[in-house]
Length: 192
Length: 247
Image 1 (tube, each protein chain N blue to C red):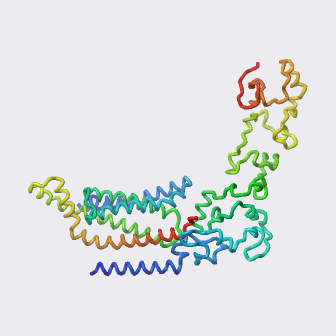
Image 2: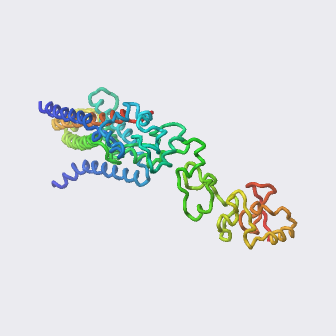
Image 3: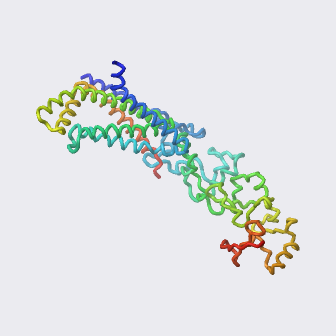
């Protein structure tokens, strides 16, 4: 019973993390094999842009954006952070040089793991709220309205609220450390 | 309350990291250690870098005077080794140090892979003096030829050599001989087929005159494929050969 629970609830998130590491190792190996290491040097830019784009979900969650389904934004957030993190890990993994960018990368991986934890909590909350959606249905709400109600209920669960208190500082650390790395690059890059 | 404490601890840590960036920049932000000659500058980024500009050549020249490169050390002591090669810096079209040089180990890895040096940076007069920087290959082929590298090799890369002998004459198994057998006097614009016992002048003359061919001195014009029966000539020199076959 416990094993089945582990497989159903935890394994998908572990798989996400393992697949990220595997994809990054594969990407790094391909760049080295085909003598394309220079590409890895630039992958930090698209990686960062993808992660920044994924923050559209945060804007939607805080209702700074009102268009579009929140569920779609969450899906976008998950997909873009996975891809962006993978690109940044390849970018960082090509060569070890300075401490600051590595701190930024470690913080980013912690944020990714934290994000998976949030996803796990959210999915679990959704399952608990499945019964509630039946109730909404009985009240005569349309499927779209039910989806929206259940989504916001799930995101306001107590566990989610606690998790967010952890996830935000980690994300802040990633942002500041990454910004430090980017500023250092801009400052010392040979522009001329 | 608890989350505010976590946030404060986090910000305090980030502040410590920020301080370390300025105290030990060579560990925190530097893309790898500097080359041995610049180790003393490791923690002084701005000795070479101008913020948000890069590394202007003027910073390098302040120590490495172009006219002294390869001849004197930065301390002004005359060099006794490796003088010839490094002195080519005096023949550069313009001084652009970072076009070739990168001092950080992390940067060098990319530059070596990309091959930053371009012969286009050299003054035209130096382009024909390959031997001032390059050693001539010692293989059997290159031991036979003269010093005009550009006759076969381009400025971009050594291989593939741009010269294709088959465009002029195919070196099949019967003609796989030393260059000097045909190109006497190391003049590769001239050749003779009469150096071989198979092609004595008298024998060649007899065979051609018998066919009514009087202009037979330029053998490769018609016998480019090295097959004496495969004759291609359209009546003019060049690549537009017409094929005919004599049995």
